[in-house]
Structures are given as C-alpha cells and as structure tokens.
Length: 141
Image (tube, rainbow, N blue to C red; front, side, top):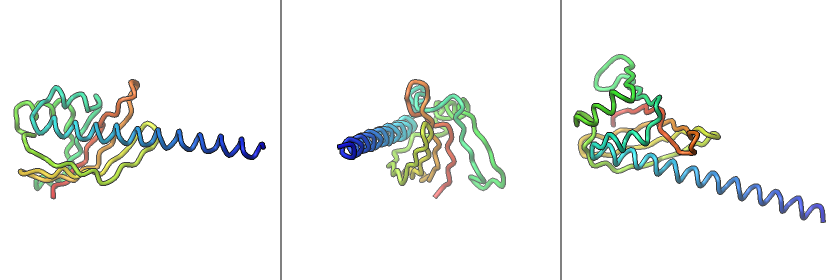
C-alpha cells in the first residue's frame, strides 16, 4: 500500500514538472516569435515588451569587424525605430531550448529575405513570470 502511494506521488510530481517545463517552453517560443515579428514590422514599442531592461546584443566580429561590440537595448530600439534595423520578413526556426530554472537559452535561426542570422538568445523569467530576452549573440549566415 505504501509503495502504491509513493509511486502515485512520484508520478504526480513528474507530471507537474513536465507540464511546467512544457508551459515554459511554449512561453519562450511565444517570446521569440513575438520578438521577431515586432522587429520585422519595426514596432519598437512592441519589441521592447519582449526585452529585459538589461538586454544587449553581443556582436562578435560581425560585418567584417575584428572586435566584439555590445549594443544596449536603447540603441537597438532606436535603430529599429529609424528602420536602420528590422523591416524584413523572417521565418523563425527554434533549433533548441535549454531551461535552467528561471533562465533559458535558445538557438534560433532568423531566416530573412535581406539576411539570415543564427542567434544564441539568453532569456530570463521576470518577477511577473514573463520570459524576456536578456542577450542576443548573433552570427550572419
């Protein structure tokens, strides 16, 4: 009898854990897709809702540079507003998501007409249980 109760409790915890992980993965995917769509239409206000206040793009030797450049959230959003960045129609291919409690990373391909990026995104779950992107480390394909 005790064995049955113990196995039932274990099964319940396993089911709850799987549900939470699936729920988080779904929310992360929605954040990534929303981020992409807002950038595609140059909607900086909407885009900001998907980004943590500490958001950064870490550009390691992009566009022929020999250095690492870091772009903060405010500069990135301004480039979206002025249409220097964004304005493409991209397909989003989420290759993998790794959950680590209230943090996650995702490898994502943003396949556009103008350009294709493969990014490693780092996300955090904020105090309101919303997933936000805190860093983007892209490479150009």
